[in-house]
Image (cartoon, rainbow, N blue to C red):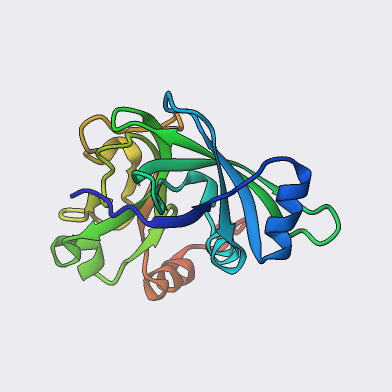
Length: 207
């Protein structure tokens, strides 16, 4: 299932240079530039509060957006830089890179866990300890998965689930080369306590 691509709304910015950028900021906008994709750079302006909300939500520089500019054809973009005021830490300029449908981009993809009822470990009271609720994958811009799926069927207490255990969508690959951990089935706290009490104290000797 393809991931829904969020819209990023902007307006064409008339004029270039520091004076035009300052004017955009005075009017409650953040100036930006859209470049790449074989087209000429396009100066734009984004509404300040809307941009700030996106930035505070996180992952702004690893999210693929559908850029909507009135009078222009929608394009897919990723952020390649956010310049901030050194004193106020407010965004004052944004660089956006155009992407074609065959371009490769690194994005964080949600991890979904299924078949909890088919896990022997969970039936015994174990819990799923999620190490990575999202995984950064390199994917094709025109075919972004909504999520990747971890099947818990047959998983028992002590099992560790690595990225190599997960079937990834065609064309997707992790940005990290090692076989990192996504989750594990942890021992229930009651069972851990019982095992601790049953274990002999270290250093004791037979009478």
